Amino acid sequence: MRRPRRPRLPHLPAFPRVRPRLPRTRTGQRRAVQAVMAGCVLALLPSAWMFTVTDDRLRTTADVPRTEVAVVFGAGLWQGEPSPYLAHRLDAAAQLYRSGRIQVVLVTGDNSREDYDEPDAMRAYLTKRGVPDGRIVSDYAGFDTWDSCVRAKKIFGVDEAVLISQGFHIRRAVALCQEAGVTSYGVGVDDVHDTTWYYGGAREVMAAGKALLDAVFEPDPTFLGPQEPGVERALASAKQSAG
Image (tube, rainbow, N blue to C red; front, side):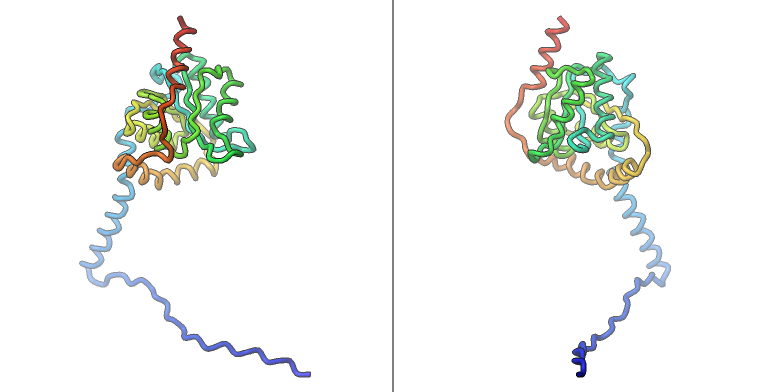
């Protein structure tokens, strides 16, 4: 018994490979170089803006000015617990509280679904390290840095704050909170320069562009809503305890 013949596929024409052609004239080559240089300058402008506006705003946990409120930005959870990067941010906040440099911690992060709650995990971590529960305020709609900064100002009434994050992110946080109306000092915590650290640093180059657009156009955060008195109440409680 003969095997059935395979149907012949129609012959498809071969398309020539298109290779980029370099300009042949000196004028064309000069224009190509100028275009590449202009693209590089435009790509680096957002980063240059961030470094310029934050140059005198970065501090350490030892020399940051005494400020009523610290803002800790979310950085992911591992099995419901703060990731190592987030834990280092929270450790710095707890250190500032114990040294008397801050009175209240505003934890801001993602709680967009029931099984993922950054602010509550951050609160639990801080209370285990000596920060009273009544001195911690939760922002459950800090979906990105701009949202957290705008909500700190408009929802929680924060006018001045110490911002705590990793070194590769702290300049963007300070720049955006300054633009949102929060007088800010940044504390960049140290971390091992592992793959995640290098990824975060590379990501900041792209994130700087979005940050500049946020600063220019000032979009509303994902959720705004009514003002919340959490920070005001926590500060009043701190003053009563001190008195």
